[in-house]
Image (cartoon, rainbow, N blue to C red):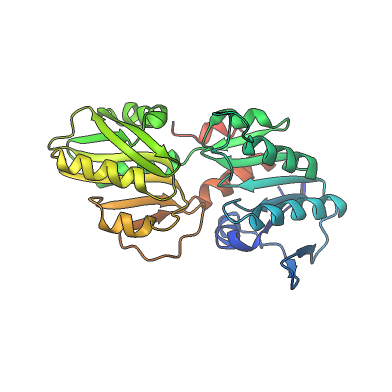
Length: 312
């Protein structure tokens, strides 16, 4: 493969842990890169080895703060100027994805702006996972490989061998994702209907469906402050559920999320490692997506089907 189209994998500062696992799965070295920080907070990116004529994969999730996005943009620009054959952005967590439309007057569409920034910087392809809104793929005029964390979550759920399993969603907006899980597993679906006072603050929540004497698995894409998912878990336990677990693709976990999860009725909170998690919470568990992204990189390089590796 390397003789036909050499490829190299590089990583931004805060996604190095994941890039190292991806490289271990691909049996290739992680590329050498230097990021110099200046006293005023500015930083500069440089490749410490030749990338001329190479297909360059840049691993960097764009989670807060904005330095992660800016670092990726500089990595792309440096790669283009160093005569890389192609530049593929590997963004397991695509930040600003919750700003995907004008839901009220005079607001920005952050996801479109980030897509434009990446396109202008010069990426040739995007590999990402579980976008908050599928239509964000249409913000790009380049190929987008949209992976699904279900490839690691479904085997995990099946390994639990839970009786009386029910799949649930903490809000109606995630019903499509949860419905796909319930159909694949052949179990009932329960919805939660919530209203918000403002962003990150849940006012009321009602359960639509039966959770009494059931083992519930809540499915979501992003957990930020954990207000919604812990409220849903507590309400379900009060309604007679045997246990409540939660799975979510992206571990944003802004304070006081870890405290809320620890104090909630959740048995466990399972994430992928698209975002690093360094805080302490005994209930939080992370499943690695490194092998899935490594296999996608291999298939991109060998021009094989990406969709055939999806479970659902």
